[in-house]
Image (cartoon, rainbow, N blue to C red):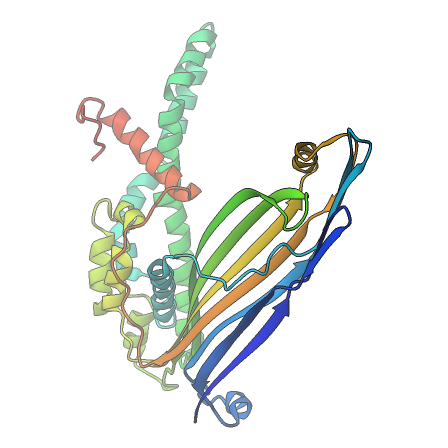
Length: 423
């Protein structure tokens, strides 16, 4: 049974301002509210307890007031005529209107969530990437024949030069430090660390092969998000007073994409050979992603695009997927801060004739609004991620890998790329 509901809430923002004996009061109002629609699911709590699907489409768009703190400020000064010029402001400067979402890269958030979803879907069946492991094993073993060769070589040369040639050793250290660090980092990142990870995955796969023949996973979750923010600052005379302050408007929008995957794996005994191939990732659907990962510089291409995730998604079997629930939530927090300022206020009093004996007191006011837009949909299968360019910079691991490769290739081929290209 489908339903649609809406509501409104009228909020008054009282204001009282004064200049000498002239007092102005007002109560501007703003209307906030929202609507929601969906498909009712009778006895949904019982269905969840019984493990039955209780998901349904749902949409929400609502604005509400989160916080309201009134401004309280007063100021005075004496004129040349010895009369006192006084002013005050109490309440809210304005009644903020509706909240608009900032533009956020929803596609990037969705692609991030899909990449994690396909990975977790694969992990329910495959414990390790066996084909990739076999393809990289030769290079890893070659690296491990002399692990951290740069450090060992430098240490030997340094010790050999120590007697009577200390200055030369220090000079050698300065000239080779970056090369040694980059070589050692690459050996660790692309040799030792992956091998340790593969060994652990192989042990886990073997344990599952021996003990968990009827492995079953029925619910998987994966999510991604992106954030955008904006702000502005301006000086304003608060209505019907001589109180002057700064208005700071700030908006923060976050989009969250979440997938819930219902996957039913038959609790039945399959042949040992099929189960072994599944757990160790030695199946035909792993060939295409493996071929891509073994291409030179594929890891660097993945820093700038999501090509690897797309190939993995195209190759991933969804035979066990029963349905997918996708939820996209956009949440914006709008903060309006009104801060009376002593210098600006006194300057305005001077402009209107005050000359001395200035007094001031004040505290800021704040209005915080939030808007939430949510859409939940039920789909038969996971969608495919779309192609996307990415900014690789700002992540320490990626920055270190790229810097290490740059240093290694420039030191290995100093004249091969005079134009600056490292490839």
